[in-house]
Image 1: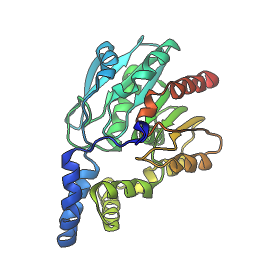
Image 2: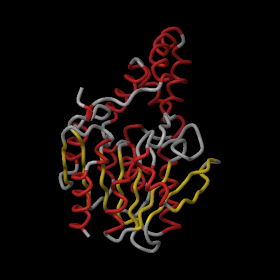
Image 3: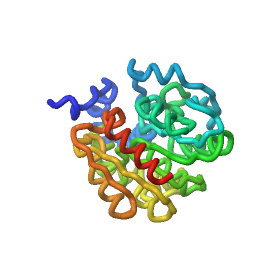
Image 4: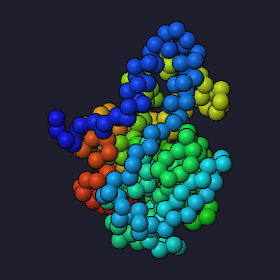
Length: 288
């Protein structure tokens, strides 16, 4: 199998869940749906690989508290310079952007990232898009206006949601981001071997607990109700986590956006590709 498109080895717990979940769903669906709800909002932590150690060690680290969870922030470069925020995806961490840090600093940016609640070094077992927004709001209020946002996967969606909720940001680069609500649920159901009824149950619980329609916080719907001047969408055709048609759908809704489709980089290795980094920097240079 091509190394660039192979799947990350799944934790044993996830494989076990895939085995027992359909059995519980069949005999006790309401119990199964509560389990699915918790799983849906509970990321898996992965260890930081050695290749990210350099930017981890060079970062200035601070922390804030979000819903009683200590959240770790990282920043690189000169405070007071324009801020470029990097937002990781589900089960990710800030240092996954290690290839972007120096190029952004070279262009005069103060680069800020964070391990969201329940991710990386931050506390918690579960999180949601509102908590990502809370951290972004803290950065804007306490570190300065955010000029550029680079988001991977769920991180890209969280940037659009933050704009909807009032974050002043006109330039967003979305990499490997899910944009279609049903695709998000399809991927989740595959991971735990669930039926379509699980999707319906989670949709209903989102409305009940957050007073939000799930579709209203997907990227395709968010772009219909926000004003974003500069949007660059990057996605790989061999992404096994989020089909590249998600990127095409978002580009269709926002035809003024720019779209780059790559080949052979998958869902996460795309963050380490020189062409992706260079093209991102070129896009930022062009519009600033």
